[in-house]
Image 1 (cartoon, rainbow, N blue to C red):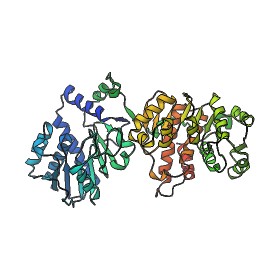
Image 2: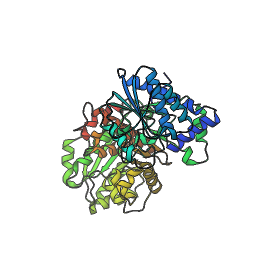
Image 3: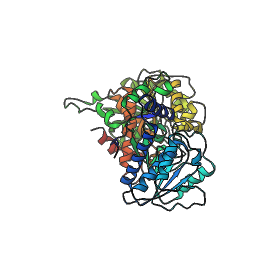
Image 4: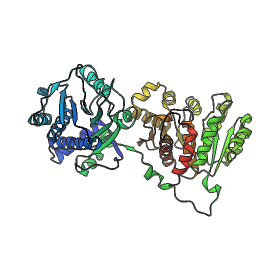
Length: 504
């Protein structure tokens, strides 16, 4: 079997970057385009057999261009291997050109007679191979193509997509009207960044990667391109490398060595949010955690979690001593948007401490034109929309562009939450977290993330690193807590897993 990767590479690429990698490999390293196509098809077929070893019947749906060529070669390989193979095309093979023509001739030599796809076709097989669209799709899927994708999704067959699920935008991760929901995707040369955020994970299923054995120097030449759109890549976050800062603690240490987090929030009726953020900060190792909240809440908080110090704060005079004791402030969980909230936020923004700003503090921040390299913003799409004075649909239409705009406006690290959360560091480098699950769609998850990041900063972890590590810890803890079921997952369910993860 061709070389595969036990672990996926870190770098993620745009469609334009993958095309450039392909061009470099062919033109500068003299690798035949059909050679790359045959390698892609061979790898895809081998992964298909590994995933579904008992499958005997396979249907391949082909569009036009090189993605269709991949599918035609795979069909020929499967037929030679004794499988029952049927092939449907959506673009007339007579219109093929270049390497795809060679691929079609290979199919014909395998004695397979492809048929034009019709919405009347009933696809009753064990495995469907999606080779309809490649990475270049930039318009909504319509007509026969939409019918073919819907036929795939309505079938009971298992589905393998080649390179990228058809209908999924390789750059944004959005569905272009309709998209294949694959059980597995075999992708080549470079991981496409759209497969890891927005709808990408849902459509891609299990992701397998093969670099097609192109020289490593191919990637180095891409990085040296003068065009930043070509040379700047996105990276996946990996907990195993990020948690190297969580070293074993010295026996002769005390709570003062591990920082003091101040959580500000919990307006009337919103006590729980501040409490969850505070416990998260403590569970990841902060030495001390205090909450500044409404006076009516203070004694109750101390009862339900006595390790957390809770202070009633109604005036700036009551807040100031708490700020002086803290190493980092997290503001927003349950803060509300009252005059009390505005007063506290204004004072916090004047401090020189590192800040983690979330929830209503973000909504109030929108009223001020401020920026800082010493704060972390953690908006969900709705909050991001208010910060950029747009709507959540625009934010989600291109999450990578949205986080770039947030960073340009507010300067510090930014977390754009959602499926495939994005992180922008102080320098504007973008990272994707491919962990997390739908069970996190419940109240309090964002408050826990706020506390996790603040707790890491309190321990002296650099703000960029703390943000990336915090997002990874939060999502990984949620994945562990969601076993065996996602539905019904609660924010506090993450706590024992967070504690375990920060003790690697």
